[in-house]
Image 1 (tube, helix red, strand yellow):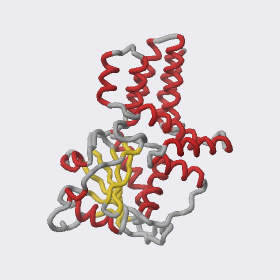
Image 2: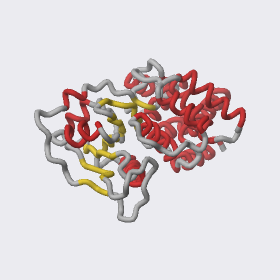
Image 3: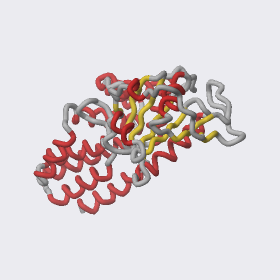
Image 4: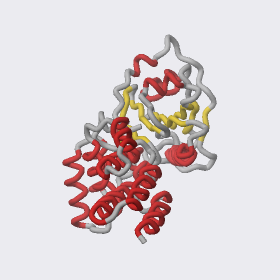
Length: 305
């Protein structure tokens, strides 16, 4: 999960010693998925039919991830069969990888079968996504994110890997997102506010600005302690709000929404209004197209009226 104790952003930074994962000799690669025949090349001239999705284990990690990443960015998808959000995120990543036509490779890692890899990458919840570029870790994210933001992240990964990509339609948003990804919250906030000043209805900029606020709220917070404090004080509004923030960052947004909707039902007056506004800010983080937001909005309306 994205650990607020170590990063001021929704995007995680892994202090992982990839050298410790290198084996003594390369291991033969496992079967890989290719793009369908007749697929379209992506910017940069990558031909259709290239490898796009592979299954990776600890035994094949050196060959399929470390060595491959020297020429092609590799995105790691930590998942498990029992993980419901994984069943939404993994197909999306696979589709984006296919669209990429081999400009990057999706490496799927089953955490149940590869617990040592999950431990070394400090995977605390799934789905968790990282990138490896040139044998080095790159920022990633945890939890189910909107497709638009995942596309932006993949674009940043490709650029970091020296892959030519199409010029984004709105370079202002790319600049703001890159600042957010790198943890420069002041620059990100300034960039998002500039976009909103020029385009007040820009949903992506609104979501980005909400991400900045969320990241600042959890800076320096110990997630386990925050959740424990909320459990110990079910009517402590501040503790419940912080716990909801932590849950959103850990990919458990639906739990966060339910937590605050239940709190709305138990409160009144200024406390209720504070909780309502906080929940709306978390909705903005996810974006209006997230189906979980639609359900939570209906639950909030029932709680209020």
